[in-house]
Image (cartoon, rainbow, N blue to C red; front, side):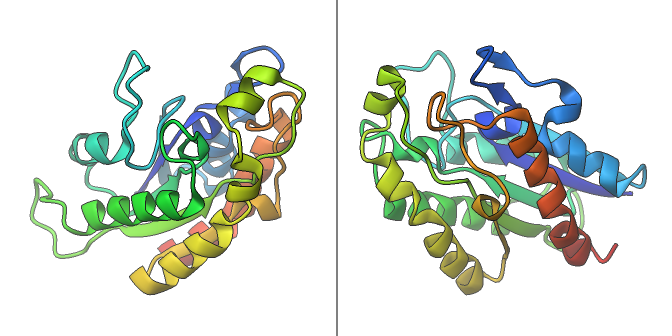
Amino acid sequence: MKTILCYGDSLTWGYDAETLGRHAPEDRWPSVLQKALGPDVQVIVEGLNGRTTAYDDHLADCDRNGARILPTVLHSHGPIDLIILLLGANDMKPVLCGTAFGAMQGMERLVNLVRHHAWPFDSEEQPEILIVAPPPLCETANTAFAAMFSGGVEQSAMLATLYADLADEKGCGFFDAGSVAQTTPLDGVHLDAENTRAIGRGVEPVVRMMLGL
């Protein structure tokens, strides 16, 4: 049995910009991945709305700093064969970070945390890491989201290149979710059901290759 941990934000949680609720379980990309891989693989979903790579959100009612929470999550779900990191969209908020380079630095912090984690069991093998760049933000008439992510359209377009270079440097897998999915203009950040399903389909062959399935 192989274990995959999907560590992400609202794109992994399944936020629906149309209903302001949550996509049906079968429409969330980790569910699509689980169905495609079958019963011999366990896909664990750790998605939190608003989660950043490594930045504090002092306005939130929970801890959204991905770097601070990750070690606890690794302990909770280990042993793990593959960790999929899909974060960075929320780093585009100017009040938190606001730059693609800052998001890349946060992603590097997450990779280092996994690589140097004190696993609570005897194992010489570290889990594989797959860095996924979120689809770029798009223009929206939603004034609240447009203001919240001011400058994010331009900055988020740089994420895939920066993440790909980081993955190459760190020996991680890489997938550009923007190659298969587009954000919805309803809020410029999130995904409709078809686009979140597309990420699950798109990432499947990469996961199979990394796990030797």
